[in-house]
Image 1 (cartoon, rainbow, N blue to C red):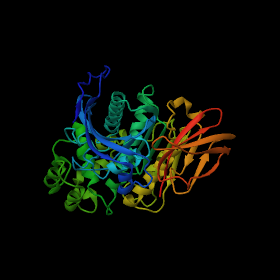
Image 2 (image 1 turned 30 degrees about the vertical axis):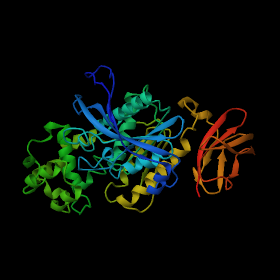
Image 3 (image 1 turned 120 degrees about the vertical axis):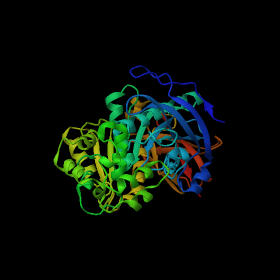
Image 4 (image 1 turned 180 degrees about the horizontal axis):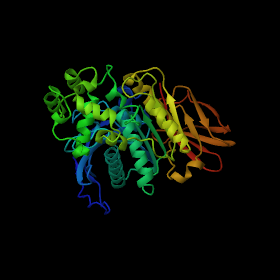
Length: 464
């Protein structure tokens, strides 16, 4: 049964008293069910909830939004939060809170101990109105308020959090990830601390590298992006244009608007779009955009660029050099700008000659693996202690050998407990090294390592 929260969003400029409106349990997975689903190294089961919460629209007025939350079950660990921001969708129901395909990312993160937050964004899911597509401010506000709702829920339900916050997203979600990271560091540094940010294949230079699509006279594989941006920015910048016929040439001025009612797919839009996107624009509009650096649409795009700030937390942008939708230059422009501005920990990782669809899995898997190396141990519960973290292990799931890692530890005693809490193995290790666990029964185990300075509790899965 859904739990209702009597929260409200205070007027602009005042403190929010409560963000979470309601929650509803949608589905539960055991650890084995997650493995059967394809989450091969799941260490725990998860409960999947839909959250409804208060946020603000592009003009600062209160509005409702929704998202999915995946909560690890079956342990008493302190958990990190991982926020995943989804890619472009047109259909209002094709979002994580409706268990869309994007929700799988939350399963992968939740299955290794993260409390996962997947916002739907404004105008999608339970949120009214039109989605302000690739609008940095509301991508960030919807995501940050989702994080607030998740923390409220965890506090009310006794789910322990360790203060770590990881951000990632793909395509539009890469843009949303970067926007959220920027907003947290610039506006809410006392409320959140970003541990690491892994935006993937995002249009960070939306007014430059990505806007070249508007000017090009060559085919583009996803022409629906152009009208989506225009209609989305109309929702955020009402004075951008009046009627569709002011921007779109016939017959697209009448063909396109009905297809953006939240019930049609990108493929349905592309079916009526020409291969060269700018063909749908009126000649006068395209000429003005091309030649006027102060054109309102160009200024709106510039307002949503995401490389003119200096991230302080680690950022690792993943991209593919053959991406035919969101060009690799977005990541390279951002990298150069961040490094020139003195950002301390920014990288761009080329995942190879893959197109936009082919880049999804390797990029997000690389981010997930990176997050696992930074994830606090089960009993670790304070961000300032990150530099003092004890032991870590890899892989998280193994049929034979565990690698125990510590930057400087000497002799340590270790004990392994099974899921029931029974001691099943013990011994000593002299500094970092390998531990053979082939003699253990399949299932989730906890290894506790005492090096005299602290005790580290780490989970791993002994796979058959």
